Length: 290
Image 1 (cartoon, rainbow, N blue to C red):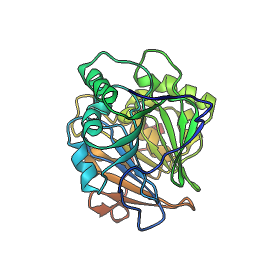
Image 2 (image 1 turned 30 degrees about the vertical axis):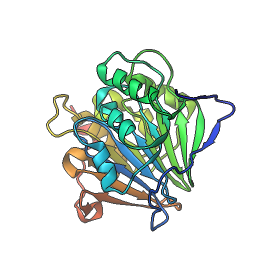
Image 3 (image 1 turned 120 degrees about the vertical axis):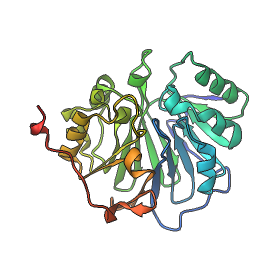
């Protein structure tokens, strides 16, 4: 049975290590945006070797990708929302890898993918955390949860997550669209080095106000090659290109890894090459869009 943890008692929750994940040889938080095709799966590892998994899209063997990285346990798994391109691989993770804590947006879904995941969670001893306003300590890394507004819409009830390690910050918001992004703005969001593009870079998931508040230097778009949704949208790319110095895409760059350091600096590795070795490409400015 899941053990429900109250907001007050666990407003600040320390996530302890439960396996033999390896400590980083350098002092940085590692964020890896796995190439799962049209979906999301993000692995975070603290300098102490503690691990968070945010989403686990379908279409690839997420467990295999974790094991390739020497990850044999997960301190917290977070499902931003219940669509299959974000939780399609989570059941396999829950059944195959020890997970200590699990968090989702609290909005049920009717799909077999969601129901099978719920059965796997109910059969486990994983502790459930509510997506309330709270800080989670992943070793020396803080995961600041921005709770969704509530309602039945999955995309616009994606969990917001600010990753903080010293002066380095990244922001993940699942498939949030304009309505939820505006809600997050009313709660307050920081400027960040790294922004995961909401909703795979769709047109309905970016605004000038959002980018003015977050001021990302790097935008990472997780999407599949030649996907049927047209992600990322050209108009969204123009928005991102107007503010970010670099746009990285899993459909073009493959897996994207960012090493964030306490002083706010970072290093980017795409696939098997460092991103700094590649000539940057930026879309035309916004004012050229007709």
